[in-house]
Length: 321
Image 1 (cartoon, rainbow, N blue to C red):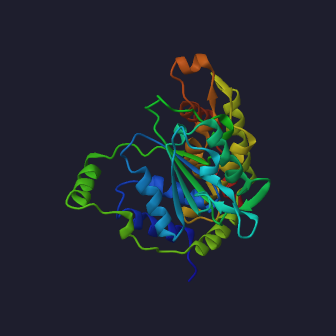
Image 2 (image 1 turned 45 degrees about the horizontal axis):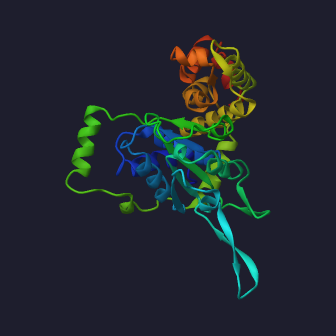
Image 3 (image 1 turned 60 degrees about the horizontal axis):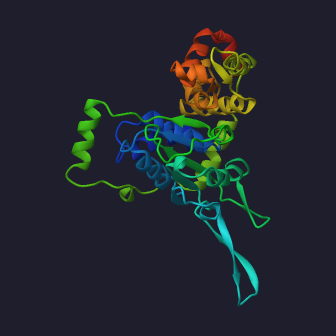
């Protein structure tokens, strides 16, 4: 029997739970990003498991994994690689950087300068890097998981709109509940349980089959228009200077397909759109200075838009199924 997206998601959640406690929604969103060739920004305080989560997902799919620790002195060649002259062959040879991996963890991305951050744009959008006017294709699959600390601002460089728009999801892990924190202490207190204890449950080629299943998930005209209505509503919401772009609407379309497949359905419901809307859109909505002073956020805008936007009737939503 062929592996389904729903079974793969459940197995991945169980696997990651061996080292990361209580983060099923985050695991599913990282999985969804892999399924639709997206990237993820983990925005949370230190110590909640961002790096461990990324490593666990990479090991579960037998993906090559590299990590970049961002600092202000990081330069683009530290990420993409560099051409070095070989005196023996009298030719320049490309020495690939850490970006040549299936899953790239960019730790504390907002500590890198805008110049270093911009070196990721081509890779994230076009799956290639250009060094000395020569383009080099990245491995397939390729996914960037970047982390940033939203609290500490000294020595950081906020990500520009173009960079943020390349991330499919902005995910917040949050602090664990009381029982989860007790489980963390029981699991990691006596001895550290590292991601090196995990064995691959799938190989990278399994993602190709799973991606085909997600692409085959159908969406009715009513649900498709619902996504467009949500995106347009963000552009005229109170305090919004720049709303969700057409790229954001397309990202929500694909994220909803992945969510439906993870739930074991072959068609998208409005609930799939709602489930992914905040993570897909909140970092793509930019507030005016006055709205920021009032504490208004992109997440609040998405919540209001979902409340106001008419939801398609269930019969219309299921028409694609």
